Every structure is written in C-alpha cells, then in structure tokens.
Length: 209
Length: 382
Image 1 (cartoon, rainbow over the protein chains, first blue to last red):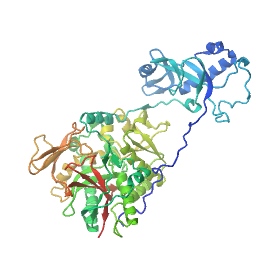
Image 2 (cartoon, rainbow over the protein chains, first blue to last red):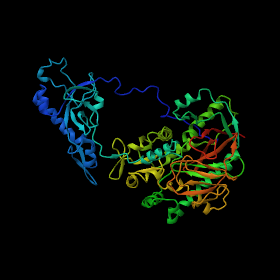
Image 3 (cartoon, rainbow over the protein chains, first blue to last red):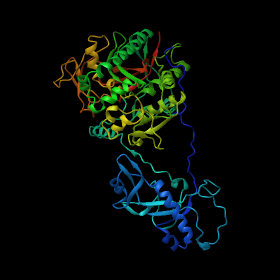
C-alpha cells in the first residue's frame, strides 16, 4: 500500500461548543482615584485609601508596560510621563509609564455611609471566583498620551473616565507581569509584499509555495 | 496517467469544514476539485515519480557542501553575506529538516522533469496528506472507486514518524502570518500531527513573536527553543528580528540551510553538476537579455508562480505579475505542462526527511501554475 495507514486529526476537527470564559460574567463594583486625597474626599476612610494605594504602588513596578527606551514609552504616554523600570537590557534601561491613579478592588465601606453591606465575607483579593464572582485585585492605573481622561490598566484596559465607583469584569482586569520582550519584528515583508500585490490587483494568499 | 471525471461527494463542503478545511473554496473559486481525479499505474508512481523524487532530492542535498565551499555560488544564490556563517553552521551542526515539495512536469510517459524545489515553506500539505486520503477512503467505501484503488500518499504517516524521531526541544512552537487562513490551516495540520506523535506543540502568530537580548519568546514570556515557521527565510533575514534569528537558541524547521535549496538558483547549479540529466531542465543564471523562444525566467525567490515570464516554442509570451521583482533571476528551458481535458497539470512530489512521501496534483488554466490553481486527488490502479 502506498498510502498512510491512518490519517486522524485530534485538534483540527472543532469541538461542538466552546464555553467561553468571561461569557455571562458578573461585573463587580470598584473604585477609581487619582490619589489618596481624592479617595478620602469621596468619603472613604483615609487609612483604607492609603492601604489600597500602597498595594497598587507595589504592583506598579511589576505590571507597568515596558519599553526598550524612553522615546518609545513617551510615544504612548506623553513627554515626561515615563520613568525607568527596574530591569535592564543590553542597550540600557527599560522604561515604563508613571502610575496615574489606582483602582481599589475591594468594596470600601465608605465609613458605613452606604448602609451596611449584607455580606461580611467578601473573598480576599487573592482568591478568585467565590459565589459572588471573581475578585478584582487593587492595581495601578495609567493614562495614555492621546486620551488623558481615561483610566487604563497596565494591559491597556479602559476602566473609567472619571474618579469614583465603576463596574468592571474581573477577568478583564487581572494584573499580569509586564512583558519585557519586543514584538512585531517578523512579518514586515508579508505586509510589504501584500501591499505590492494589492497594487497589482492580485493578492498574495499564502507565504507558502 | 489519465484524468477521470468523477461525481463529487454530496455535501462535501460542509464535511470539509468540519475537518478544519476552511480554504476548500477561495474567493468564490474552487480550490479543492473532486469533479475529476488522476489515475496512475503503480509503475508510473514507483519508477517515474517516487524513485526520481528521491534521486533529485539526493542530488540537491549533495550540492550543499559544494555551495558552502564556494563564495561565488553563494553570491549567485544571493545569500546575504551577514548570514553565511550562520547558514553554514546550521548545516555543519546537522540541524534537522522536516519536509519539502518538488514540482515535476510529467504526462505519464518519459522522464519527469524538475521545475523547482519548494523546500522552505511548501504548502498544499493538508490537502495532500489528509483530505485527499479521506476522499479516497470515502469513495472506496461508497463504491465510487474500483476495489483495490490506492494512492501515493504516505505523507501523514511519514510526518508523524518524523516528529516522533527528530530531536526537537519541547515545547515546540508553530507559527504563520496571522491573516492567512490557508497558512494557518497548514500549520494547524502539522501541529495536529506533532501532537499525535507526543510533542508538546503550541501555535503563535508570527507577529506575536517577541525578542529580548537576542532570544525569542512566546506570548507567555517563555523562550522559544523550537519553531516551525511557515514564512520564508529570505523574508525573515530582511526584517527587524533578522539578527535575533541567528543568536536565539531556537531550533528552526525548516533550518536556515534550506535557504540554499528553496532558491531557484539551485536549478542552474544542479544542471552544471549533472548536465543532460534526464530529470533536469537546462537552466542558467539570467543575464538579463530578452528570452529566446522556449525559455522561461523566474526570480531566485518567488512563490505561487509570481513574477514568472516565459516565451513558448512558437513565440507566445506569457507573464505573471507579482511582488518578487527585486531578486535576481534564473532562466530555464521551457517544458510545457501537459494538458488533460484542457487543463495544465503539475505534480507536486513530497519529501519527508529524505524519503518520497506522496504527490498532490494542481491544475491551472495557464502554463504558469499559480495560487489560484485547483487541487485534484489521484488514485493508483493497475
């Protein structure tokens, strides 16, 4: 016999229905502020405001997006809005945007002004998915160069356009360690050739042969 | 060798899609075409195609040390000077190779002639190794094909054996250009086979590959220590990450030395070493002058028939535009593709490791086989 004994696929034949994570996920209330004083001005206990800010600040050095140099960072975040990151690469220091605010994940009790919460047992910030949905870790927020009003997470998820309470999907705001690597250094020829091909009204479908 | 009309399986399109074959029809044009098949005798397959494929492959592999030892040949092949050391090192280390496809002109009689080697990023792999195989089994089961019909197609078996046997680091990554669903289909197929042979394989879009201090990383920040890339080496070496490609501790499939064989310049070099060989077409490096009747010109690096120009024996000029006009060219004696029922037919003959592994057939309505040509299945029947 000149043909394969079998030809099976285990990955390509799609599974009937995928249950997507995050689908139907419940939103959580969080609070967003520029700084501790602003937090306190919204009738939150200053000690809590300070404690959450400290958590966010500690996370900042871990999650802020990294750039190979200051210029690339400022292109995204604006002149004077970047600082050196703790890591170095062969050509010098990495840069990262400055922290422009923070998101307090745990419901602050507003000095009991909001009228006591029914449940006293909120999941702690490190534990995910209790009966009330996943927790939102307190984290730093940033503002991009061309959109100074929007608070964004380190992974560029917009969360609010003004201070105060807002709703977020917990899965969309889970902090991740910053990536140091540079991307997009392959594939440029594909783009160039595709453009050339398009001009000749005869597009390239494949980079195989 | 003959072309036999055949009734397509009812509803085969939906079935194809359920098996991950999303590009069976491209821009509304038929790509997978089962309205006919080609029939070969076992002797035609074994003597004229299988043996010839392995002989041509051995001749090409045999040229590599000659080329590496000769700067003039490296110049003729337009191998960038900055990467010659890395290329030679990849050969001297014995970096493994997985697969390749050679295009042959064959009409059932006489010696098959080598048109070119697609030895870096060959495609039509899924169509050949999997969907053509499924078609044969289906049509046998339905009684639409004579009992005992076989196919020259051990591609999937041989790829699975290759993945199981090659010394590949794990996890092993697979990459293609994000927007090409055809390339993604091919890479998914290889990833599937690799997984079946026990490899921890992962997909990453080419544009998502990261580099830091000369090492490549995946999107989780893990180093990429092994990478199958369905993207031409000659492109990669012109891009921003080119330098990293030689410093990163990454085992590449295909290896960098394949740049020598996927290069059309291998054709004149083969002819110089084996002039008059029955399976070779006379070829020379192009001197830029007008083409004589019965010759064609193609760039050292080109894909899917792009930038090919030819003049038929009776003086008819034919050319295919494309994006590869920047490379040097070769010229090759024109061996017109045979026609069956008005279609120009080309045979793609696969090599896995160093073994012939099956064929796939392409039909076009022109002498130049392009990416719009159709893929037809075949059978072997005595």
